[in-house]
Length: 102
Image (spheres, rainbow, N blue to C red):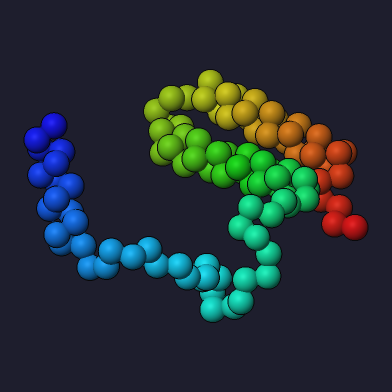
């Protein structure tokens, strides 16, 4: 408890300002037009999921490329099965209309 009080006293002693700074959010130099927790259309979430799918593909494919010679043909079959699952996800997303912007 004493350590907590010492640390609190030390932090209040080194603090530059005791008042809270209220400033407008910085958005690349542009004035803010909407609230920070405003809602996005659901298509943005679906595009984010498709991006994560392809990002994870690269995360798993890079180490696979480095060891495919040592692991043999079984790893090639497993990678094509993995890619088949990803292609199925893209076909599903396409069928659901994720890639339509109108």
